[in-house]
Length: 245
View 1 (spheres, one colour):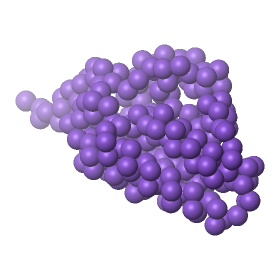
View 2 (cartoon, rainbow, N blue to C red):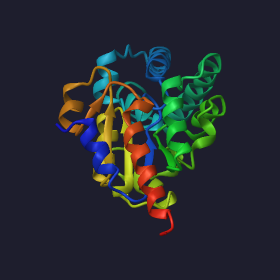
View 3 (cartoon, helix red, strand yellow):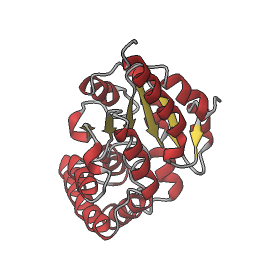
């Protein structure tokens, strides 16, 4: 496994760097909220007592729709109507929960601000529904810094397929090799790497599968991860623009 420093150094070789964040569990510290919501929905409506291991091993990193489709296929009637209703209920409960406390941590806000202040374009690629993401962004100082949002509704193939990341890179006017991705799940890391992007996994307690899949892992998002590299890149960019004397 490489170090985070190695991944960031390789990314900073680009003349036009950009950053893409996964949302749930990465930019937004809300995986415990989502687990609680899905657990209660599945217990009440599917009579399924989902465990933390069930969620981590089979559902984490999938889109909201895929999570519910998998649960309904195994424990429900398997109908599209059932999936649609559970999606609706999940969205309503999620908005209630994030209204009490915005799940984008202050350290993540500082990271986003550092990147934006240095004119590095930012995107989000997520399996979450667009309205949920917009609700969180609207309540955070980080929300106005993002140039591109690719949500569950915007792709035909979710992670680990690279479609979402490649679409975001195109909209950011960047090549895949210009992009650093922050991801917390195995499908997300697989998608970023399949897209040809640099990727840092974010996990305080990474699973063995994530350790095997990711090229480098950091415990949490922070501005300190990239501050020196971004500052050096900005200085080099300024020196190239300085007119000859």
